[in-house]
Amino acid sequence: MNEARKPDITINLRSIINNLVADRRLSMDAADQLSLKTRSGDKLNWHPLEMIAEDMYPDLKNEGKLLDLETLTMWLCEKSGQPYKRIDPLKIEPTVVTKVMSYEFAKRHEILCIEVTDEEVVIVIAQPYTSAWESTIQQSQPSSKIITRMIVNPVDIRNNTRELYTMARSVNQANAKGPATSSLTNLEQMLELGQFDEANDQHIVNITSSLLTYSFNQCASDIHLEPRRDKGSVRFRIDGVLHTVYEFPAPVMTAVISRRKTLGLMDVAEKRCPQDGCLKTKTEDAYEVELRLSTLPTAHGEKMVMRIFDPDILLKSFSELGLANDDYDRWEGMVDNPNGIVLVSGLTGSGKTTTLYTSLKHLATSEVNVCTIEDPIEMVEPAFN
Image 1 (cartoon, helix red, strand yellow):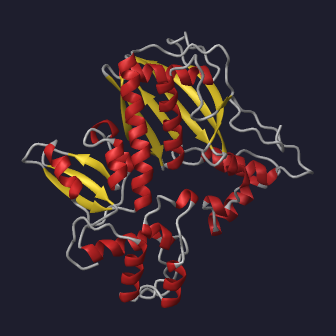
Image 2: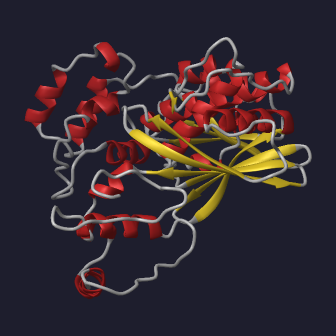
Image 3: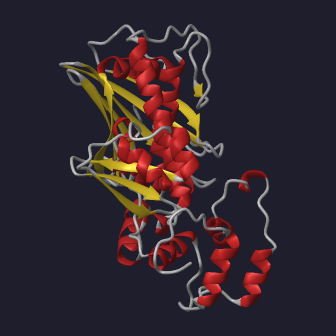
């Protein structure tokens, strides 16, 4: 690879290895080992940078650092003279960016549109020396609009491409089909993501599954489904701050909330009184998560908030919660008192439930009887009554 960009040259594992060695970032021994690697199984579609990053070799130019995927991606940016970009999925509008190109086109060229403005179309790429795709995109845009290229971690491109196009396709199809909602006769207590039956609208199920999977990946503590006159907004609470991630047409938002109510054992017909419910689901890696559902009537329909509870909070220690030194000593002193009251207050998502459950778990030894008064019960722990 030279400093100047060479269009229509697809980088491969051998060229990347040679250039890393030439730049004294990779040892010859590591290069020999990497030369023997082959793609198979799930690795058939891997980018060359992924193949190298998998083994986490030492970065010879940066003592104590490894050649992980982000480091290699930034090195590729320097090598090709093109800017680096980290994708923030919370700032991407799926129904806008997916209109720029088809899913098949994006997948074939390892590119993704992440922003469209009046002046430019921002495209992130994993192959810096190919440009044949630019003319196709330019033809579909006004002549005054420029195409801005940026290099991104290839895994981020692949994952976000799948997520964005799945969501956009499901929303469009659900909206085209109309406002009909699910008529489930069996009430589910465990939601299997991606599963549906004939009584369900497949597109609404896909939206529901995608929303939950996306929220887990973003480490959201809450999902807010908020109806408006023409469109409804979906917002995730991350680190205590709400971020708008999607906008759905009003009929789609109504159908999504109705399905959640059914899954949460709530009265789907009742839309004028607040309701509470709960359901459990699993992440892609079979990790169980509990969701607490709450609805509230608003001017344009029901608003729903889903609180995501991580059962692993019961396994965390005080130090893992960030309580250390004087803070830890003070808190332990309070909860170890044989009598008294400790009041815990704070904003939504600030860690009240996590702190209290961890404290109760700390107290719940075989010699101590722990009883809680909760409505609703946030999590079921065998050591508590």
